[in-house]
Structure formats: C-alpha cells, structure tokens
Image 1: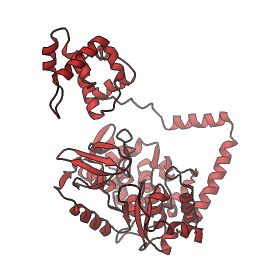
Image 2 (image 1 turned 180 degrees about the horizontal axis):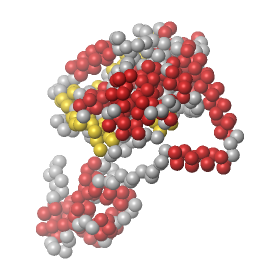
Image 3 (image 1 turned 90 degrees about the horizontal axis):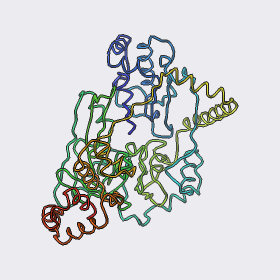
Length: 492
C-alpha cells in the first residue's frame, strides 16, 4: 500500500539463502541493482519480523559490495519497522533454521536506536486489550482464560458468519471451496492481469493476497485485501457479493456500505516507470483464511480454532487480528496458543529500555542542536521536494469543484468546452452518486432551473433508463442550450 518493493527484489538476492563471493560480485555488477542501491539514502524495511536473519546478512553483503564500504549497509541509514510478537519467518525445506533478524551479524553491527511505539489503534475494548496484553507479557491467569471461555459458541449480532482463521492452508482451501459450492448460481472467474518483467511479476504475486483466478458467486463472503480509504474499505473489510458480472462486482460490507469494486493495481516502479504490475479485484473468499495471511489485517468478526496451535505466538497473532471481544468466536484453544516465545519477551523488554534511554537523550537536547541534526540529515540524503503528481482530467475537474469553482470558470481556466466539464461531472456522479453538487445550481437562474427540471419530469423516463435530452429540448425550444439541460439533469 505504500508503493514499496520487496527487499528480495530491491537488493537483487531473490530467494537465495546463501551467496558465494562470486555470486555477490555478480549481483554487484547488475546495472539495475546498482542504480537502485546507489540512489537510496534511507532504506525502510517494514514487517522486519518476517525477514530471516541470514537474508539480512546477505542484503548487507550485497550493499557493502556495491558501495565498496565496510560499514553496515554501506553507511546507508536503515529503518526497521515491525513487531517480533508476530509469527517468525517461515523456512522452506532445505533452508537454514528460521530465526528473527536480531540474531544476524548485521543487526549486532548496526548500533540501532530503538523507538518503541506504545499506542495501538486496532482495539479499544479494554477487557479484550487486557487479555491480549496478558498473553503478550506472558502473564496469562485464570481470569484471562475465563474471559476467553465466554467466547465459545456466543450468538452473533453481526448478521454475517465470522471468518474462520486456521493454522493450515489445506483447511482454508477446503472451507472456501465447500462454502462457494453451496451457493446457487453461476461461478464468475476474474483473471489477474500482469505486465512487465516476469521475475518481478512473480515476486508481486507471492507478496500479494490477490488470487490469480478469483472465483465468485452472488452471495459469496469476501474480504478486501487492500487499503482504499476513498473507496470505503481497508485491508480486512468483510462483505458479501450482492452482484457480479463479467466486468463488475458489487459488495455490501458488514457495516451496510454498498461498494462497486474496481480493479486495483500492485506495481513495482523505478524512476516513475512501471517495471512490473499485477491488476486484480482487491478481494478474496473470506469464509476462511490462515493465521499467517491474516497478519496486518483488522477483522470485525472472526472464528478461531486454536486447538491445533503448533507454534508459540500463533494464538496472540490470531486473537489480535480481531477488533473487539464481541467479534471473537472461539472453537478451540490449547495451552500453546496462550504462550509466546520467551526469547521474544526478553528482547522486547530490552527494546523498551533502549527506547526510554533514547527518548530521554532526545529530550535533553536543545532545540538548536535538534534543528542542526535535522538539517544535516536533509543535506546528507540530498532530499528533494517531491514532484506533484499530475491528476487525470476528471480528477482535476473534481478538485476544482471541491474548491467551489463554477462550471463556466472551470472550463475557462482549463481551456475546455463547458460540455467537456459536464462530461466529467457526469462521470464523477456515476462513480459516486452521493457526491454533493448542490452549489452548481448557482450556475443557472432559479427560474430556468425550475422550468427545465419540470420539463424533464413532464417528458418522463422509462424504468432503468437515463433522462433523454432531445425530447426536453424539443419541448422547451431554442431558449435553452443542451449544456443547460445537462446541468439540470445532474440533479434528477
């Protein structure tokens, strides 16, 4: 969602778990990798808990080779973001043991400054927060267990079955296919569209939750898998498909919002050019999902079976996806689910102490010194003011409408015909029927507006059709232009 790129692709290491000196040199001679690394002043790695310790060391070796430096990351500033209470990186068969990155040599050499973020924004249910904190801090009591016991087989007031969280992929696939097959009607298939470098496309597919083939029926339970605040959804928003066709999907969310879903793009860009891109509807079937894939999501309701939890920390990750205790439906729970990795707790306490020390140090600095540090940093990274992204022509018109500019003045300022501006407004209203255009009534006299408005109603319209201009023009004669009629038609 940040327009980033996977660290594996950016650094050129791909999925390698070992690199010889000659292989590192080979990567260091690839022009596209050198170009990306050479122009990077600050590297931000999100979800750092998911990166293997040995891969961080590989990335460091590649960067130092390219920058011809012995400093960690070649002297580049590095920012790691993440939570080690999330599940550790997954190792495939044949890969080295899976350890968190703080076990890497690079981590030890970086002399990182820790900033511990203490506020959370997913839950505001104090009782549920106490349960989560008890698990996180390894102080689960009988009270904690009793609260969780109340979530076995409760009644749901949400009007939608909870999404089931499983620890294994096979359970998820079976559940989703079974539930989809129960629905009547035709299955619609939506294929992912791709373009660009094949390897980068494959990287995007692996890092994205969008399926290559999305199978839906009307009535299917779905989950949005991308943040789009303007579109009315975030990663984890649940809903039901109420209409689907070959090129259209309409979803009613759990909160009652009806969304006409548009395809979304997941690109990899370099210097403003798209190197690879996948395009798909930001949906997946949501009767079930794995705990691993739920990381980063916020779920209103979830049914969780932790009776087969095989990894410490899995219970915390699964439970913390849910916004409130009311939205939690438990089917099973074992002791492992309520435990966390004690090593992580030990490191977490160290991070808290380091953060307090750093915070105190910053507070004791004078304003002059802080300002100088800010300026030195800006100079070092050679920061430039980002270029303003050019809006598409319809969005440019919408921006001016939002500023209260009249249609005639928009046309004049943009050197476009009034009819073109009305085209734009029709598209804006089609995309968002609730878009407020009340102030456009001032573009025409009240008398004219009323006469045209009444004429449209007199001529009428067939059900499901759009009001036609020609019959109204014929009724009113030459004193009103087609642009006048189109303006009033926007209010029908």
